[in-house]
Length: 491
Image (cartoon, rainbow, N blue to C red):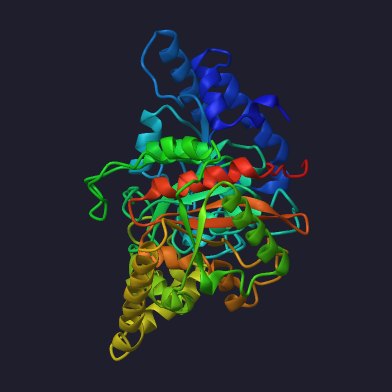
């Protein structure tokens, strides 16, 4: 493995600014790493080698001319294949969008290009971000770099695996019910879900519009904060975007790295205090909390009784919204079209296209969501789930009256073997048990490595109030400074 690929994004940025490395050298090293390990990891659906090298050369030329460039200009990034990228295939992990090349960039893609980040390619994911293992991709699963017989989490397993396998120092994910944080936990990386509305959804292929949140994946908390600062902020093209600047997440991460948490109140969520988690995960959680206390944090126990209803509420709200959003994939406007022989009706073509183009998990959620929204059942299911969402938000607000941040395990278990849960959707859904409440509330949350259980990574989740993203970065960086770094086995 090249020493270049071992560097953090912050380190690469400094070396590029000092001209100790060129952007072309950095991009080439990561492209060679991808070529060397992709056969074992399958983190990418599309590697844009020519585009990456061309962009890297543009950055080098700009730097040589003395043009002002961003602090991460020339640093590579991998992008989840649910983010539209102009002229580059965007499939959302689905056969129904196979080969589609968008005519425009998502807002966060535009901001990364303006900052000089070099996109290496598009990463694998569960189809339309529906899944917790990346096994529901139409293009085959991604493999966990820690153990290639296990899942890398989902839906953004490709982005997390790319970072863990040193194929990219940074990656973009999206988090609807835990799809950034859960993969980060099981791959030993950092995954951050910003405040809902703090990062633009313009150009994000929609799954659940009131929940979807783009965010950063990285190997360090500082790197995640640096990427967050680039992609965050108000976007007038997104009606749900918050018209406020991004909190000083980079400064908070650097403050936390000093290891001083004096005066910070940590709320231990009574309902998520390791209950239902594997023994090794629960033990790592307790050890992480002890480490934070040694850094000066104060422990406060909080109760969020409605968190226990988060999982069923989510699996009514998210499928309902997905059944509406995915109606646009009809075989007429873009993407796959099946059975159009000039004899079949539009309805028949639409039916054949969706039958062939959608995978089993997507079909399952569309059916569930359509039923929940149907006449006679809307109030009983979707309406009730939204009421539960309000109760969960109130739990958060009351808890944050006592604590600055809340902490809990990120996942109840470590990465499970490939194929072990695909026949039992409920067991698969449990992977998001601890992450879903933050999505229903809309507040930020981050997963940071918290040790090992049976040789596999465990994550600690830190949740903060809406638009207080800086708080979680400070605590996450402090924990990172107190624990030994995790290094995946060599591939």
